[in-house]
Amino acid sequence: MNFPTFDINKVKTPCYVTEECYLKYNGEILKSVQDRTGCRILLAQKAFSMYSTYPLLKNYLAGTTASGAYEARLGYEHFGCYEGKETHVYSPAYKKSDIDELINYAEHFVFNSIRQFSLHKEKLSGKSCGIRVNPRFSTQGDHEIYDPCAKNSRLGQTVESFKADVEKYGLDGISGLHFHTLCEQNSDDLESTAMEVEKQFGEYLYDMKWINFGGGHHITRDDYDIERLVRVIEHFKCKYDLQVYLEPGEAVALNAGFLVSEVVDIIDGSKNGDMDIAIMDVSAACHMPDVLEMPYRPKLLDSRNSLAGEKGEKAYTYRLGTVTCLAGDIIGDYSFDEPLKVGDRLVFCDMAIYSMVKNNTFNGMALPTIYYNTEEGLKLIREFTYDDFKSRI
Ligand SMILES: *Cc1c(COP(=O)(O)O)cnc(C)c1O
Image (tube, rainbow, N blue to C red; front, side, top):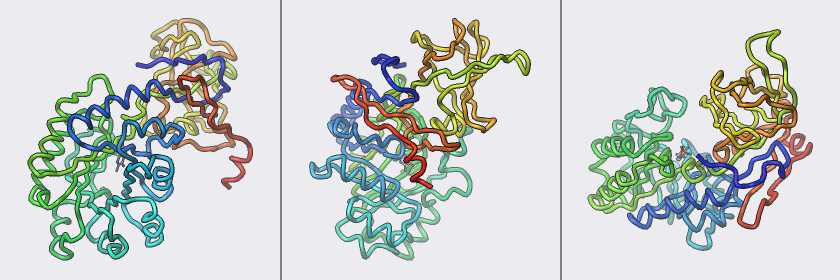
């Protein structure tokens, strides 16, 4: 677990603070995997698009991947396309106008089916095109919202559908296969998934130039089995002579950022339940929507940098709510050694990923200020105002 290395009292709240030292730590791990295996690792911008960090990240990564034109353009313009960095894009379907724009930014295109590719292939000469496959091999347990292998999934082509399309359209112009089925998983799940992909699609791999293992690899987590990842990459590289790509989002900025918040008020809970309520200046719905969607419980540090406990674990338990009108906008129940006071600062951990990219101004909530903490100190990257709220509507 990472602690803030900046003074939490020197920032405006609410704010996200991303820390260079932790991005570097992750970057070194990802770079070592690439150096050892020759694989290329791309940043999935869906998870983390804080482009002020791209000058740092491009020291470690081979490029970016995008889910559409905006992300592709951001990666192209800020991640060093002029220095040989790659821009990949995948979408379940492209409009003609999407392709017209994307060809300016991306050189690798992943399609959801050979049929989708056939609709656009004329415009794609000189581009490297691949197909996303769906091995229908789920390793995720109960996270159906994050499981591309769930029944009726729209994401990727099953082997039956792929074979039918090969009959109809051939494989001309297709040089890669892509699968993405993991979410916060270790390399044992990657291995079993990759073996399944090989079983189903292996006969086609000899004709391909690359394979993309997608994202969801928690490579920078302490207990991640990197040796197994290396073996899986080497297998595809050696047996099929493939360039292997990985496109993690989370792993790039895992534990690299914080959301600093302040207690606005405290409500006595004894008249309407069994715990006091702290009203915070951050909202789960607006500033960390995965807390409600996934759902999950972020780690929380109190103003003295000690980790808050589960409900009832420490002497003083509070439900953390916020100033929006949504009854369910609850961050969670946490306990502390000392009573909370108005003005106390609380720090939510692991808030660089799926936070800034997902936040919104529901209920007129302000967007948190963004800081980047580097060796030169805290840099204010962006502050938001009324105009940011107004201009979107
Ligand atoms: C979400 C996504 C990623 C990144 O996933 P992480 O869980 O953040 O590593 C990569 N590729 C595709 C196609 C995705 O949808």
